[in-house]
Amino acid sequence: QVQLGESGGGFVQAGGSLRLSCVASASSFTINVIAWYRQAPGKQRELVATITSEGNTNYADSVKGRFTISRNNAKNTVYLQMNSLKPEDTAVYYCNALVTDSRHLTYSYWGQGTQVTVSS
Image (cartoon, rainbow, N blue to C red; front, side, top):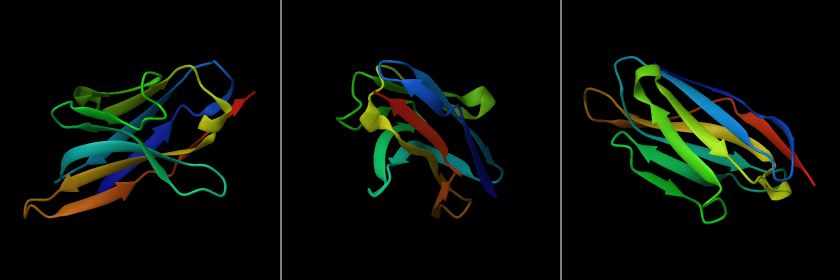
């Protein structure tokens, strides 16, 4: 079973910073990619950033230069450092993991989400 737990959301003024954490528990699975998504009210869920098991990262254009995704393998934790926050960053942020099992089948798991609110 795979479990993801997000934390670190909150309320911040524009220009401020927050750091989100995603702790992954994945017994009998290999975690390949962990991603952060976000969903604002009335909008579709969108990809924010990804990090592979090798540490390769990718970002949405809207957050490049402001957000940094990183991972601590010893703690099974992925972080999303968010700087220079804007009101349009307001959303529920979700952690997603792509994992494979011993049969090399791939599965996708989601965390419960954490709210980020940026005031102008």
